[in-house]
Length: 486
Image (cartoon, helix red, strand yellow):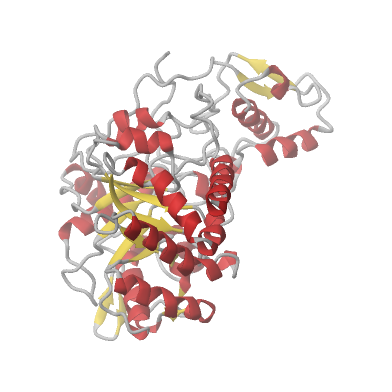
């Protein structure tokens, strides 16, 4: 055991306005209905018990959304009174839609087993199943899977204690302009919404929406960054009698408009994801993320609502995300692995009030790192063919910090090769053969980090802690199949 080698990150963006720092210093308490997402797509995650003990409880986090069932996380959360939302992976939608026995098995294994100690609040069926990039891959199974989960909860006499929701990406409701009044559900999801919305209404369940502000900012070139960061100098957007000075309110009212056009304008809304990344893209920095998160939490605490729903904020909002995940999909962008408020090893990147008030966030203690060894390129070797080794390393490890705008984008050659080599080396537990690269790799005890570009040291992970969600999904699928045959 040894203390963390992490050092505070210096902002890679222009100095933030004085107003922001004043807001941070005197930040009001967060709205009671603010929570945080906790994902598990990491090669070397912190042990779940340590996450709960060192991060969630000391920082007074009131609620957490798990991206998928995790026995370790659920066991650690038992007895804490932290409200829990548990996710159903997209890969399980088809089998759960096809079999009530399969849904009953899933509820038994992941909910009933822990219900005496865990304060379950929602079961989120699917992970952005309506995302435009998914096409029709998951849509046909979403409502039937949700209905079967609901029946299983009814049979287990748990339906009065938790609600079934379906996370819906904000691109499911289209808006050719920036005006919320013009929003409507995409034509290709209309048929599913005709089934989903009555299901949610019949069970008094809210509509869960996932927001992606940085993607919206990248796509809408004519809107300033201030608009996304809740800055007072932002130029309001007029939409009839309504005026919008921030992205969040406009997004919520666009959804309200789409729901109203579908006949469900009074449905409660839960924001399942809202965050800003700190690396992997231009404008993905700790400074900007702090501005967004602080602005969002303070905005929610004021409970001012939106122009279409004054005084009625979303019933709950889950910040995205608790920790970085180096194996998260990067289909939307390289920044998807860098949404953590904390680094992968549990060290806060910036200040945001999760419930702890104006005090600094508490970090993970006594993190068990692997030895202080890194893998770099051997500059004494012929590097004329190093490109293939570089590509191989990046295809199997995390090189997103090398992306344009990323913290390591300025390394140049061959520093970027060393970064890729080390990422692969750490993901493979510093095994000697993982630094071979046809003889071009060299193990060193001198930290090669440069300024804000950190060459990571992996955490010493047990077999349980390093169990990747992909294998968990396969295990669940086998269990579901066995139960469905009974």
